Image (cartoon, rainbow, N blue to C red):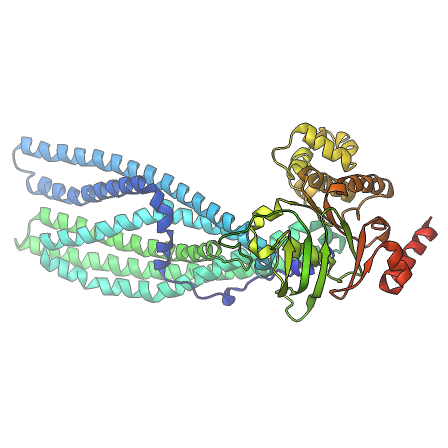
Length: 599
């Protein structure tokens, strides 16, 4: 569209532009997503408790086997049989926990992806003036993939190790208070680096995810504009820009990995040496008859369980911190509020006159540059009105406000008997068909692209719309006719073919209001004439607003509104405006002289 430069002003948010990542407590925001699956959560908790309990009972069995090795063989066999039963329960419980938790994780993350997309698809264009769509896609994919790892496994392991740590400490204390006291002296030494370096790790994890998203946004922008990049021999610069963002992401990841490695090294060193010290003292107590060999083995197994739990928790803690950053970013998208909101109790949308009542507007990205300045006009039902004027005059901005992609700074846009702010956007947009200057073609078949205008349309309906838009013949020449896949953004079609499919889509919608924003700009003279005839037939019973640079396409409009600098400077028929002189007459003189010269 002629006046939509603001929509391209997407800005990559730098990591420093956002608030610091919150603590792991932000993961509580995920609880509502688990609420619909309470039976699965309960089953996972039961399986978790069973496996943790069995793990804590096995050292007791080991102690009895060792201390009772010289006892009756029947008693010894019973101990081994019990151990076999524990192993069976442990195996089944672990398998059940994995099955339930993994499925639950996939289900919850799928719900989160849908929740993010559901909110984003309804956001007005102003929201995306500050956030690149590529970054949104990165959050939906990269961040949710990271979250899946945590929700589908890490969270379960975290809770399991919490149970093993607490249960192991209690049973250690029962087995040998003396040795337990010595082990507990190591806890502050182990936890200190976790808390100190953990904060740094959380910050680096958030930074790394932000840079990955920025990298994805830059790649998406360049690849979606590939022809323009190549036409202007911009490949090297695009490679350098992407390389810079990717390298920054790598350097951030390297710093994160270094901090995590430091935490791991400190913990392993402290825990290993602590176990050696406890083993030495315990062996001395066995020699002195202060405890049995079975009790020492039982204590050492519990110490190993506790130590491995602490090590696992330190690893899992870093994963949870990364997940906290990802969760924060996803919650930010899910809870984002649109500047454009529907009323709580919308009025009924009924087609009628379209009225701009003293409307002034500036785009959020250009608040000091008025796009419309006290614009007023009315389009009666069934009337065809053309908006003409130089580039930047505000013509396409009128279309954007009429579709309520933005709200006026002052004044009101009225549809029928109500202001747009009093109506549901879904309801009044159903009464409008749009043909934009830059047609959007989806990666689907020609048939599906046309039927996008009315999903319940039949094959006959689609073909009739295509014929009215002068698209039927070229579609039938495609390899598979209407079933031909046209490629991403319609890459297999010419500009004129894309435009005719977009026109067919609008014709199929059969709405009472038709908006044409340079709808025939990409057509050759013959196709333009055919489509123009179709539009004249289509517009007979519809309210039609046409945005055009080529005045030859709007000479037959019921009324022409001339805009310049965001203002309405003249109105009338083609003949009246030519007779009045001024901007329209000058444009007509230039264009029609050029057309005659071209002929």
